[in-house]
Picture 1: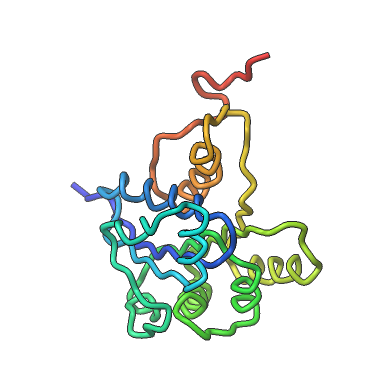
Picture 2 (picture 1 turned 90 degrees about the horizontal axis):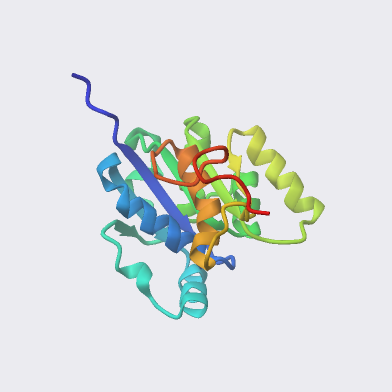
Length: 197
């Protein structure tokens, strides 16, 4: 009998506002641990500061995943030979997007993103800014043409989210779907999905 594939995933957190998205993502990956071989985390310095400011905690240190320094180019996912399946940058700042679009691998986050693109593996960017300049839009176009997936942090409301984390989950659940991990989530057209008048 064939065993179900277990995924190797990199989660990068940058300094864009929206730490709640990263928290909800890590919480859900922890719950889906039986589907995962490895989850690696790399955070920018600004990401840690924003997390502490927005979530009033340093709970990013509490996850049972392997953490890597943003300057650790010896991390396994800095090379395509490690065969990580997916990288999720959540949230993704416009500066990080620009460096990825330009092929500038100046830290572990941008190097790992470059690896995912060159190896034709999944790179998902949860971009978090508004309004967008033409530079931002062109960078999104470049990354998309190179094989990346731009998944803006645009929550939905039709499931009736009860709080900030539930609202963030409307984005995160779509990202986890795209990554190929099975989760129990609200499905349009499923039981209880009709909007109340």
